[in-house]
Length: 185
Image 1: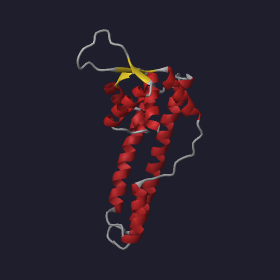
Image 2 (image 1 turned 180 degrees about the vertical axis):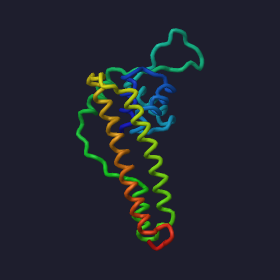
Image 3 (image 1 turned 45 degrees about the vertical axis):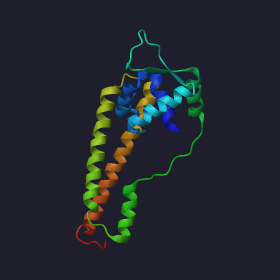
Image 4 (image 1 turned 30 degrees about the vertical axis):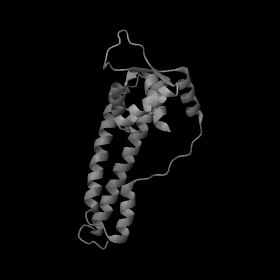
């Protein structure tokens, strides 16, 4: 149910066309709530049907012209109600962790290499988040909405820091076991 709320949030921040919205998702909200462009366009239609958003009037109607959407009061009310709902944390559901558990039973050839690949991906994501933090959140930005956005980014930084530390330790432990050569480990 969170994709419509992510879209409402993005449109309240700035009315946008579907294409602009998908690009913004790719650069921000998509870091913690990834969605395909097709999912976003589909959800825009549903939100419009529900009366939560509307297409902004165009000065000149033209065939093939991009539609720009804005949030209606009902959409703001829906988002406000959703923000106030209490929700329990979701358990971690990561295929890498499950594959490691399975490797304990059937062997782990190549597992350390896969962990190194994941480490490189997490290190790259961490660098990207840190670059965003440096660029978008200088110390003088102290407005409440900036603080909340920065906290979301800090959550991403902290998660990537966790993964890079954990993967580094896991690789060291596996290297000590010799799992690359022994499929029974």
